[in-house]
Image (cartoon, rainbow, N blue to C red; front, top):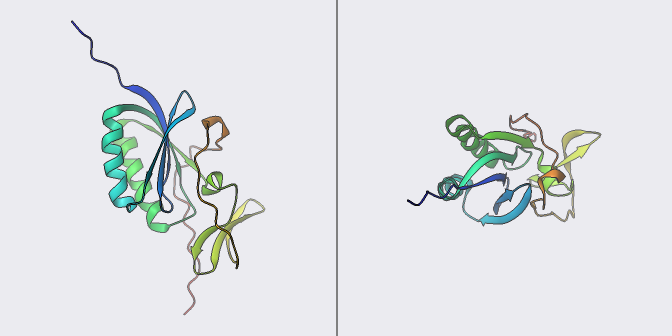
Length: 159
């Protein structure tokens, strides 16, 4: 009698703060596959995870909890928190700056999120070359925490 094949145990890194949405698949802490999706977060996450949950046994998910797109942060948090509760997957949070070499992150107009003296603030900047988000080659390069609450920083809107 043939035994059913056990799914491969993996960890994931999810960056859903801008387009494209990125998902890194890590086996034994090393990046083995990158998934990019240009669809909106609300469309991309359910589709990607439907496939991933059939193919792998996901143990941990590390995700960018902000700053960045308010909607991307909110949707990814709710979606991943639901997986944590329903599937028992461990969830860890990272600042978005972990995935772009601490470069400014677009907020709105010419406002950018920057990290100054350990604090995230918004600043007016011009001529900023935006850096794309990237996935680390190994998980040991990642600075993460058990703090998973979203980092919502909404710049003041001037009337």
